Image (tube, rainbow, N blue to C red; front, side, top):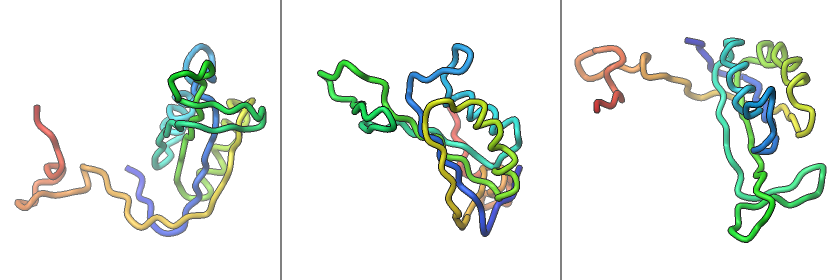
Length: 129
């Protein structure tokens, strides 16, 4: 697992929900490529309304005919790793917006890093069906 604390770089990619890369959702391709590149993490957030370079307003309201909602893919890692990933975004994102922000990571802990009261690694936070 990637350890990440202190200064980092956040890349946010804004695309349309219906944008695709080889017949699969573009946001999914970005997440899978980020995972394959070993980046610390990526999340996808679906917007309820917005507009971009086309100036068309996209909305989730029931009577709207255009439901191609905005999607934001957020990736955080150290600057070197994020910048090394940018050529892949350049290849994938033909329409949209890619922004970079400096940020500070305060806490980055996965389940396998946590311990329960008995010191059992990975037990805390697990859900059993």
